[in-house]
Length: 206
Image (cartoon, rainbow, N blue to C red):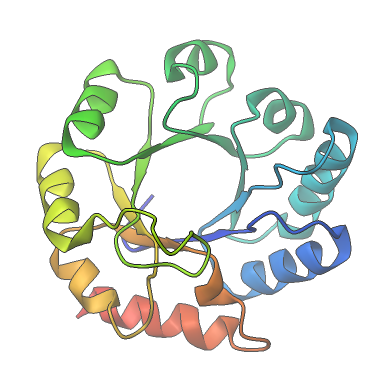
């Protein structure tokens, strides 16, 4: 994956149709990764959503990754899995997955990022929460730009920043060394997906 990597996280949307509409809009806008994070769905619903998302994005540059469910990702033909920080190791997934299957992991500290990179098996990391985020409780810890900078310097893997990312602070994220961003609310303004993605790419390109 080439920088900047732009990742949409579907953010536990309970209704399949709005989620699929969001995914279709993201694919049209050229979002690189679409992380399906629907922790409230049962296995059948999540599998069906993933299969439909894969079909929606077929022939586009967007790649579907499933949050922490490698089994569903593989069965549904998704492009990868995104592991939680406290999830299983990447190596067993890598051993079972076909070539080109993406494996990412969430990390929250420099030592954790370095250990994950050293263990091997991952293609990218998502680090956060960088800024205060509407999707987190008010007292949720915020890592800040200095921590993001340290993580980016500590590993050779692409690091995506998450948490409170906006068009106003994306340039700071880029200057800290991130290879891209992952976001939830950043992409939720109706009809603005293409403009948001284009603006983010300009920020990282400059």
